[in-house]
Length: 275
Ligand code: NAP
Image 1 (spheres, rainbow, N blue to C red):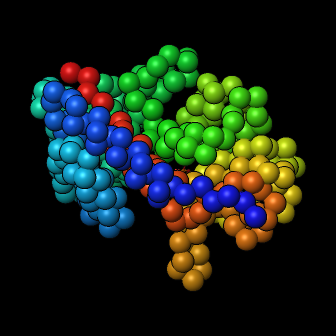
Image 2 (cartoon, rainbow, N blue to C red):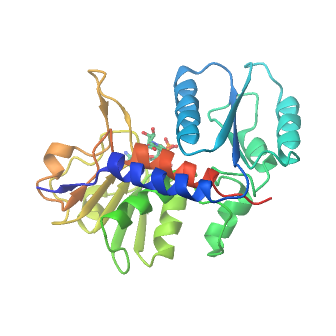
């Protein structure tokens, strides 16, 4: 039976380290989270981020705007935050309403305050192998979890399923930086099962029960980023845990795997101050 990669326990360790790091700074980091509209899931995420920030001594503010805020109004709010030396991190909770161009908003955040690591300057640096100000929280949290369990990446075959800008693409770059041999899969990939069979490490970020096969490599590592509700309303992930866990060597649970690591990793980012 596989070793369960305990994201909850590891995230608490990371948060302890972040708390210690914050206590040694000669300034208090201040994270501003922007929430537009009244998406209930977004409200929960934003409140969880605020709670985590408070636990580690990071000041946090949630700025809430109605769904009808214009793109220009939002851009001016961000410009003010960029110029405010009391604010060290800015995060815009996604999704945004359709009339607002997400990419324009992300690009308007100062790369030095872009704690999500989604700004093109940070993404571009990651692609070029230059140190960005911030790495995206989910892939960075996954690497923290792999490191906690001493899972070797150098020279290993890593398969990333899903090519989103927030998980799949940065994950692939970060694995390359750690000298893994990376294969990226997506909805047009042929013979996904055959590719999964070759993987020492699988990172699945799809949002559908996609890894059902028993044919995972013996002792491989399964990182399940996906989180969604099944037909019975139960939270589940991309990987069929019961089928895969007897064969693989390491596996993340859902919930309690990648989710808590993402928050801890975000707090690590929010503790970085570039003024
Ligand atoms: P996304 O934007 O929802 O995109 C899904 C990706 O999956 C796309 O690249 C898509 O391919 C690919 N895909 C869809 N069907 C597929 C199939 N049959 N075979 C292979 N690939 C397929 O991705 P995301 O935002 O990264 O989210 C993915 C999941 O991770 C969601 O469940 C989300 O809730 C979860 N998530 C969790 C955390 C966390 O902290 N736990 C953080 C972020 C996301 P195409 O590009 O070809 O369409």
